[in-house]
Image (tube, rainbow, N blue to C red; front, top):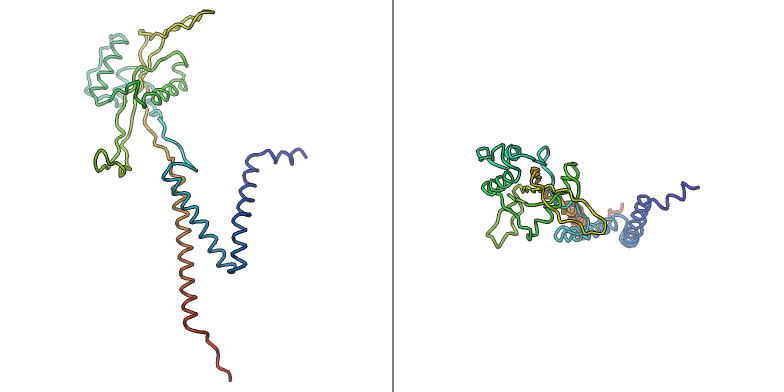
Length: 274
């Protein structure tokens, strides 16, 4: 008895039942009316073509505006095996810098090394993203998620100091102002520079101390690539599938009308009596 009552609270079972009942009532009622007036076959073709046409229009609207049934949104993902880089040599070996780039000396301080790497990134066609730009916040957040999930640093023990951007151009374009034909994209990378903070002692009754960057520790560089996702792919698949069914049923209805017209124009063949 308890197992039977539990079915009412299962969202999967309820969802399946809702879909079955709604499809049977809505689509079945239309087919019942058309079938009783036009016949079972013709009523089925008309109801199926109407349903496919409605789904085609709905999916096209979803596809254009990116609403309705959506796939995965575009996100930043860490480059496998090269997500967190600690040294200038690791940054160069990851392909972020050219092989002939002049790396800082091994005995340089972490602050001087970070300054030299920042200059090398600019020289290697990386663009520094300003803190006021709209791309800085999402990029910094994505880098923080990678740092925390990897266990390198914990939340509140680091600060994002720089974000560098490269690639991501869209093409082909008619010109810079007309880019609705730019359906293709080049790979888009970012490098998030993370600096560890000095551990502050919390005292009861006092405001938290201002965060200070620990200059004795090396900077961490989070290397990520943009995954464009598939936000409009489900809507596009529904549109193509519904379009095939819609045009196929329309073609069947057209050929049926042609056959009926040919039969009516030829008259009824009455066998001659003996």
